[in-house]
Length: 141
Image (cartoon, rainbow, N blue to C red; front, side, top):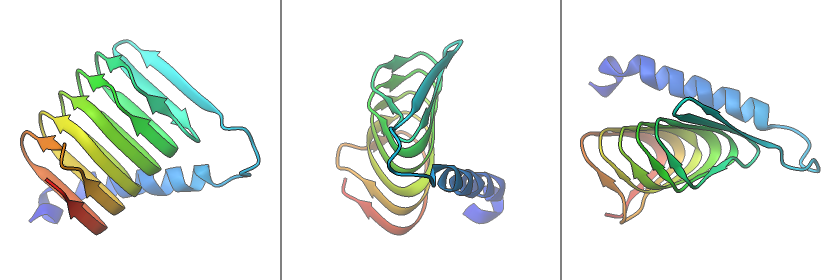
């Protein structure tokens, strides 16, 4: 049933994962280059190790190789990356795709996660629905 009603979302998440994994393949000797852009109330962070640890009035959009989020969003969290650590408070929904995802956040609305290894920490609180697809899924709370 999930694949019938949410097929387009899952396809978009897998497409984003493919794009991020392709873009993150490069010379590992290079210095990490990250970029954080504020667009109105939203924050867009990208690079090899994008990190956002402050308050974001709108949506937090992060993409890269090793993604870290530990702030508060007034909107949604959208993440694509090889490895993601998601903590803090998300007043909207969480949408994430990647190889390894660790979630220890309070999420007010829905959660959609696609990953190779997905771990929901005991500190994770999901206010509504959770849709999780992965090779290994651990729910510790």
